[in-house]
Image (cartoon, rainbow, N blue to C red; front, side):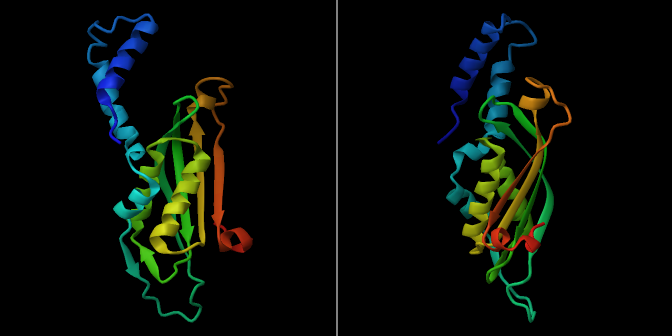
Length: 188
């Protein structure tokens, strides 16, 4: 599904009018097209299902580790920076850091692919809880491992810039799958 930039432009122009602005004034003339272009970028993930994202970033390598404790090694990537937009207010979720951990099951995924998965999933109208769940689902599909943890912490402008205006509020979500759910000592 492609994002309809023409419809976005039409509606942004209508929003400007509803706000009492003149969409034809110098500073706003190109705003509808700028917003449409921006939405195409920031909501790019809407164009893809979790399965399609798994195919896009699913390059793996056969696990080649000579260890006696096979199945006990863990891969952790922390401080992946993403942003998203809350589906309730279309408000920015920002200063978000994602950590992904998994226990390989015969193959490993390229580290940059983990960051690309997190970024693409976040580029949707989203709930922070669903971002973690979607990342875990994609990681399971790509790696064949059910042992996955996703931790996300971030700020939500629907809390910091409006409503309660709690500027320092941060939201942390934790998604646990497999051994991470049953063996708390593994958690990052």
